[in-house]
Length: 56
Image (cartoon, rainbow, N blue to C red; front, side, top):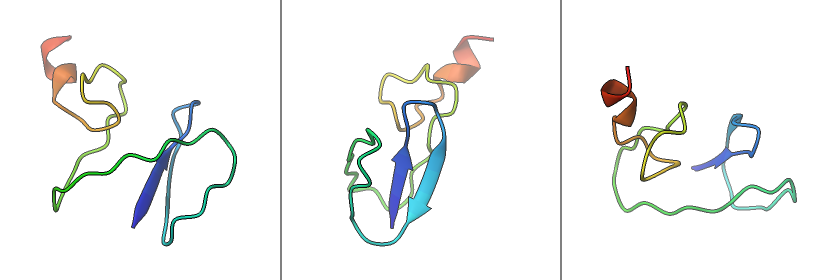
């Protein structure tokens, strides 16, 4: 599965690996399960590192 995080912060999922030309970056993770950051505070963006918990 491929998950794309657009510069606008929108998330999209799709099977396959085609680039749609909208500025999406390809990021690879070897982990079985990942959380996608929605707050943009993560040091490992686009993956969540729970930074949002420390910023409240």
